[in-house]
Figure (cartoon, rainbow, N blue to C red):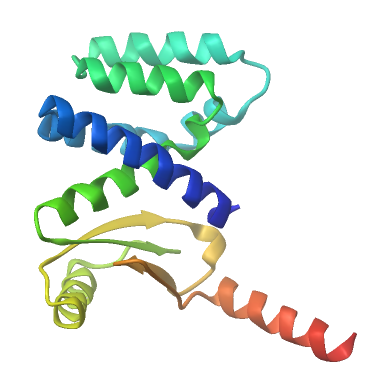
Length: 183
């Protein structure tokens, strides 16, 4: 799911980034998207976004009410309406992370994302940012997401690179190798 969802999220984030550049609204949209990304990480919200029992229009209305209460930018509100009607709320956190990366890159920083089974310590995040800065010769801005299904390790996305150092990724690669050689 992550690959297809990431590609779709990138497209939506690119569209939002272009519109926010046209309107000079990077700062408020960055704030709004960060808040929405955090909100969408909660299990209750994931369930709400994914359930087929609630119609898309109802989800769009609920999100509009929430965003109005939060005084979100008009572009954020229109964007969330569109993704709700397109049934893309389940990838809202991915869209937010992609938007943050694009914004960081526009400022000459390296937008990077680390997905881990458990929260990384500030020291670990700092070490990763330093390693990325050395490798890419840019200041690294690291976003962290949690995904317990990785079991251990982490997945790092930076500058168009995708590095999977997770236990789940290793097991998946091992399984594919075994299928290739046994079949």
